[in-house]
Length: 586
Image 1 (cartoon, rainbow, N blue to C red):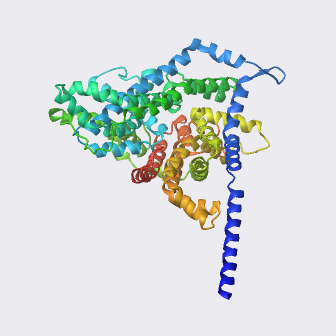
Image 2 (cartoon, rainbow, N blue to C red; image 1 turned 120 degrees about the vertical axis):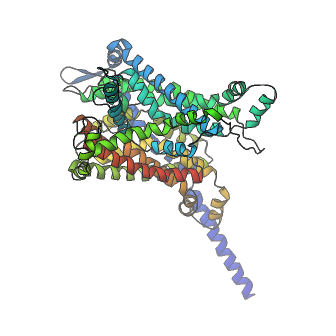
Image 3 (cartoon, rainbow, N blue to C red; image 1 turned 120 degrees about the horizontal axis):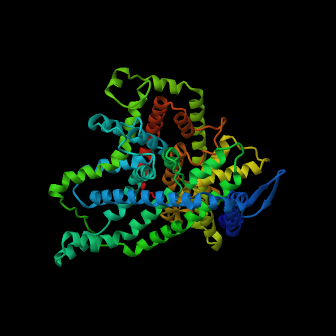
């Protein structure tokens, strides 16, 4: 009887503990409350830049420091240059995206479907090119193709006796060429997976029916690959519309302006910044980006109709190129050349005391003096410290914040949870310079939050910009985790926070780490997002590189660029291993 009483008391205590744990779980995990709090937090982060950008575009300054609301800013920017600015922007975006697609997709097909050499080298260098700052590669191409001290123009002048530069880099054509080369590795990496996954049995069936290799390529492979190629073209077009580094470095000296450089010059030229005009440029650019971005997402969804991987196993066949093997090998080396060529000339310039063009006479004067001088400069050391702090903080915030929000989206049953993903994805329509300008206006107006001119305003910019990518990484990872693991923790009496901390987070750690590395790597090299927000107190490495370029300090700029490219590329190698090992995709 005593044993039965103790058994009943123990069972009662256990039942009471289970009921208390269940009640605590219900109180803490109220799905509607958690989801709406997440929606509110996302809106507080994403909505203010939109609001202040639109408000600034509709605010018209009047004499005596008065303002009124109207469309005068839009009329002014649309009347300037008779739409020549927009024609240049569209021509630049379309031309550079076509160059990137023509080179990148062709290289991807050769790597995926033929026996062309250097396959591993091309893939590795293409991935590493993602880590190199665009401003570094852009300056490298100027040192190679520039009309004055460009190495290739010097060769033509010396060897063939040309009096005028053969290559006119500072032009719309030069902008298209350089931007297309910069995006070729990205187009290659995006096109490689779908081309590698196509079942060669379809081509073999066509050839068994009498079709030639060219007919099977045009009538079988091309239609199957078309959704992926279209999606890459649209994405390249969108990113070219928002490009800033190449139009600034190459377009402005040649008198070719795009919308991004027009926005920049509205703020940085003249005695008084023209915020109204800049806001109108920004809003119109966002409007121009939305349609191709929507088409891009539709194209990626439509790609599922052309899937060729089924339950039946296959081995992707490779076409024997025979006598075309080495000519094609030279063609695919365009991907490594797009990274190695500009970095090589930067490496050469970094060892010279003064740079007036590369020549063998420089060999005897080479030294490490530029590297020592760069590391002794206070502005470089301060910018390096700011970049590391901003990168680490924004990486931690995006990685943990996107994980928590993705956890709500994946695990909650509330119908409003999908609004979280939509809100966090909204910043994708913001070009980098537009987002930076929107944050600038936000904190100039909200003077009660004194973070303008500090590292914290840069951290907020990167959190808003990279949250959509963090959501993609975390969402993909959480979908692969079974709910039974978390339910087991709840059944054992663990709270929601304990389950999140000790079960879900460790299992999703690769995705969280990959997000942090991705954000840190990109924040270290991003110029367009910080160019309007960086100042003496919060200067960062890309801005120091731009200042050195404007001051004509090419050897020291080259030394700093080589150090930054090497460091960020090392981070890129770590990111590449995470992606390959855990199958993560943004």
